Length: 215
Image (spheres, one colour):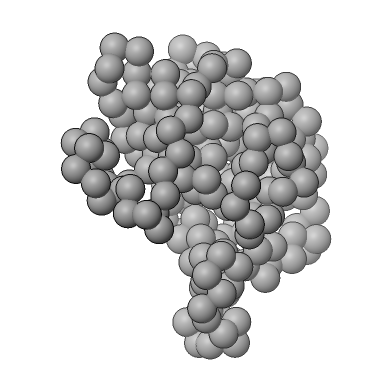
């Protein structure tokens, strides 16, 4: 399989993280937004949403959208729970990640760390920060409910909800969010990073997860 991504895409990181945790080899085709790669006809021909990630399967077909790719990779494994109620709980937290969690955290990271084109005190950025902290507080409360050995949506084994929520939570400090205020989250992040097959944003360099520099 081959993954079309960009170097610092949090959504593409979800897919690489899942593949690593499952021991699935995935080749990378890393594109550049600045060069206009995502607008080229050859990419648009395989990317119906005109964005990364896109996963090319062994039969030459393609899957788009990180949530769909995570499901595809995890479906025959313990990362997609067998119990129907647990599956529904996973979907709950996937919806939370997309609607309430990722958006403010991604905006803060984009404008305050990667592009540095906004004032952190601007009303727009303050609103994003407020929404991000609200989302992290909800995630913290859930992890506290689950206990020291539980995961976001499930108890005995992590799920794709943990994978989906990991990247933008890990990168929250890039947007000025101090994760020390969330002990359940910091412990959960470390447990994910301790799992066999964990994949850093920059391969083999976990210390660069918060880097703003290209490799």
